[in-house]
Image 1 (cartoon, rainbow, N blue to C red):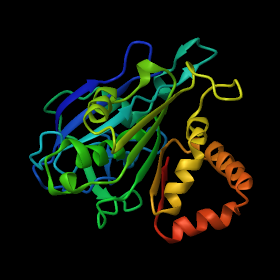
Image 2: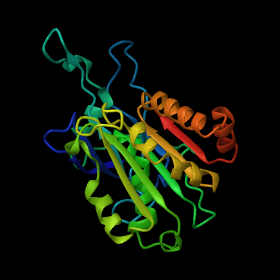
Image 3: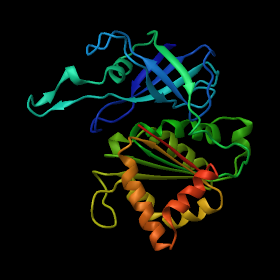
Image 4: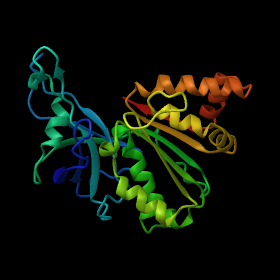
Length: 281
């Protein structure tokens, strides 16, 4: 695939750098929302002298691509860096090979890609009134951008048929680290009855117990409504760094206890019905 554009999409005070990269796959790598592409960075791994292995990234566009041609796909990539406390600065030897390769990409760069792959995060499109509850931390937002563009931004049969509620929860450190906020605000203004948006800004907000507002705290505020919607068939998605899940699971266990539900049984039932989607890395 060839890079069409690569731009930084976070503000100056964001924790780290996140880029939105558009690729032209010439229609040869069609995908569905929620799938991932693999990227193979050039060069060899200094540890074993072998070519670099493939890195998976969730696709951040709908199946038509940002330009609606069906020939492009977008990725949302955070540059991985390592701060060395002894050096008092970032150690370039320990930076993430693939994320830096992608965030430094110039238009025209040819990138070796594989896929698409993945079926965990797909949308169940058989019913136009399905509720989607989407929980993301950081670049875990990627698949939901595909969902939301498909449901609200694009002029397609799937979009015009949609009658449910799509509810997005995004957790980042601060306002400058928010991803695609302008897009979400535009959807919210146009479809206030079908789209809900909640942010957890850990360095700017406090939770009900006076601590930092993490993603699980924000979701917990709406636990009653979420559980109610899940019982009525809503699909719930989680995407982001795997460190987000223990806090979310503990919170859900607490909510289940309050409601007199058996947590394992409750989640087991949702998994069996295909309503529970987790992709963490």
